Image 1 (tube, one colour):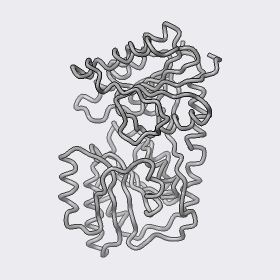
Image 2 (cartoon, one colour):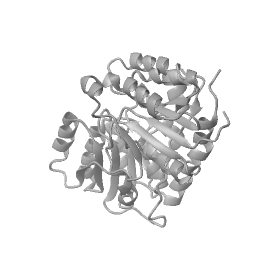
Image 3 (cartoon, helix red, strand yellow):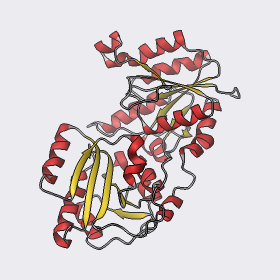
Image 4 (cartoon, rainbow, N blue to C red):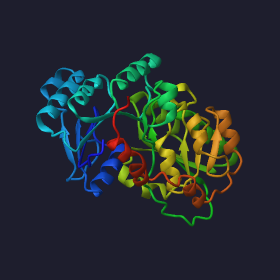
Length: 356
């Protein structure tokens, strides 16, 4: 498929705000490509020039969210010219309906950013995802592990993670005292209580040598548990949601990033966005030994690897962590800016034909 792409249409059964597609949109628009999002509104303060078609108030969706694919499909057929347009569908249940468009000459692909995490029947949900994904002649996946190990997909285009953040303090020579740790991300299904416990116990032994700031969101049960644990801890704070536009400046006030992820099948092949952002901002990372984290973090060079339990964390934290130069962190993620990912991967996905 060699036609020049002049428009991208991104379909998502979520509110606009996913980091990956915000960056893809930003770069595409800078290259003169029009981008339109068909989704359920926006969870961030979007650029006034950003085209978001909000389906959250559609009468059919008020009856059931399962109508989303059908409603958006009808909108596309009625309102959007397929010529020189690339349609990128973020995976959601029943998204297979959009695969019909490829038989009418639409340039379309389905994208998977993650396997299923929060499900008692995770294996079955991943199987359904794999089946739906195979209905598309063209598909993009976040990592080889997610595609091949979790979904069993052999033919796919890689669309990896990256970061466009910059390091504000590249000449930092040491960590502050107490050493300032930061966690950014969802609190659900992450066992972050382990890390909080490890900080509390280490500070008791060593005399408040660490502080921890937690940014993110979680369900009521998780938030209540975290807040109860840190209620009397002056060196640990929950700061709430952090807007993506503020991350670069906020990270400049910390020494070490946290990517504490349970070592279970659901996360083993899932690359964490925040590792790329921490490293590109010059922060070394404490990360669990998942397959993807092992490929990103090299012990003592750009961070430290631990098991997913309190004992392993305390064994690491009870000794003063050696200073890691911000330049070494930045160097370890060279070639992973969103500009490079767009040029090396996304353009290829847009222009490629369907798999045979």
